[in-house]
Length: 570
Image 1 (tube, rainbow, N blue to C red):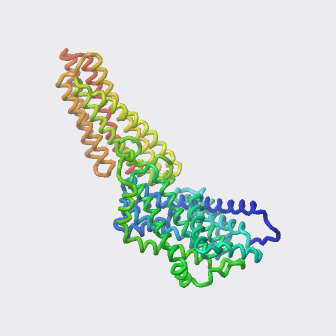
Image 2 (tube, helix red, strand yellow):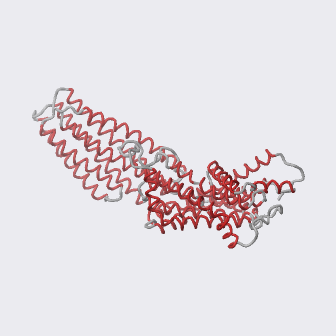
């Protein structure tokens, strides 16, 4: 630890503090993202299958947060899974409660390793080994190397933080620290707000917790006010999930609001009981005087007291609130009532957010992109039904339906662009070869759905062309087109069933075989009629053109399933 023999300019101290904090944040980001990559598919499976009741959901949130070392990552995952329909609101509440407990692990790591052990003894070797592992073969080895590199950088950042904070050097310094708490409860509330604002700015409660531990260890922050900052950090960390919920469906917004309510209520009772129950309980559990370090330059027990305070608060808050999951759910439903949120009428992104809030979590992005693909098939299925209605009722004025169908085709084009953009971002952080193959599958299949919409729009244009020419399909031709179109529509509907995991490739292939058989029969019949002079040439060619586009729709629908089956077998 460096000793100051002369005053150091305040601006230099602040810049050094920011630099150390920046290295810490970068290390935390690298480590968290690498651990998410390592967890990969298993993390998604755990979240979606191990949340059957509120207690298993709490344990799931705790476990996932301990693995990825970020409660923000877990709560953003929860919002995304609610968006995708993989978690209910009540399941999400349990996971959020567990995530709040899991995030306290970082404070313990910093308190026990960052202040009790010589940091350079393990941080620099971790950086060196992690960097070297990045050049080895095997994606999993490189991911573990990245996590180790981030771990090392995190603690190097902590060392820089410690070095940038000057030790208390005089009685005047001690007097200044004493004055911080001279306003009683008002001082406590002020430092709760400071902790909240710092966490909102830094977007990491772990970073704010580390800064709090450092200031307390160096004697610049009294124990009680440091504990108040820890409480504020629990409120500030909720901003990430609420940002991720912007533009998401109602239940996802409600899940983010639950996180906010849960922590605000917890901080409320903790403030009321902090000096009479919480801090005395921590002092009884953890040996040593937490204020013994002030003016000594020794971290003493204050860091472990603060880590224990963080854990005790979150565990107690969970125990108090776990019986109120249903009332919490009802409260946020009243806060975010049902209504038209722009997600229910079929157009625009329904599952993926309209930003890159969660693209850094590839496994989740793949789930949401798959749901968007299913969403696209629903739109094209409706488009085809409308097009067949227009095609089979040429004498009626269906201009509104025509306009709607052509507008839907433009919406599908925009959906394709947005989904592929999200998948492109996802590809940069692909966690494995399997994830990369899934990204390629989704990109190809998104384009297939867009081409289906193009074929449907072409059917509308064929109808216009026949009508503008003054010719008409016969009643028999209209009946055959309508029947064939209904069969093709079944193939699109079945694609949606398959994407939901409820169908088989064999049934899709059977539908495709029937489409090919009927198209071959109708084509041969129409050509014979044209050659025998039994019908008009222009109408006959338009009929064949419509058959071709309908068959193309069926081919592309089953092609989506074939590509998904191919990826699953690799």
